[in-house]
Length: 148
Image (cartoon, rainbow, N blue to C red; front, side):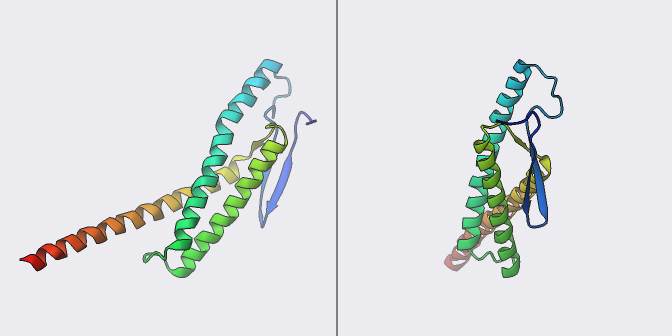
C-alpha cells in the first residue's frame, strides 16, 4: 500500500507542506520500532488535528457573530479568512492521515503556523472576555455612583 517513504505535497496558495511516513528517515527500524512510532504518532497527531479543527471553528464562529471593538473590520475579516484557510488545511491533512491508514505524519512547518494562529485567536478571545468583564464592572460602578 504505502512505500517505506511516502511524500505528499499539498499546495494551499503559496504554502505547501509535506507529509511523510513514520519510518522516515530510518528505514532500518525493526517492525516493533515502527509499530511504536505509529502508535505514538496516532496518540499525538489525531487529537491535535481534532483540537485545531474545534478551536478554529469556535474562533471563527465568535468572529463571524460579533464585531469586536478593538479590531478594525478589515483586521477581523482577515482573521476570519486565515481561520477558514487553516481549518481547510487541517481538515485536508486529517483526511489524508485517515485515508492512508494513519501511515503519514505532517511536517512541523504548517503545524507551527496553525499553532501561531491559534495563539493569536486565544489572545483575541482573552481581550474580548476581559472587555466584557470590564463593561460589567463599569456598569456596576456606575450604578453605585447613581445610588449615592
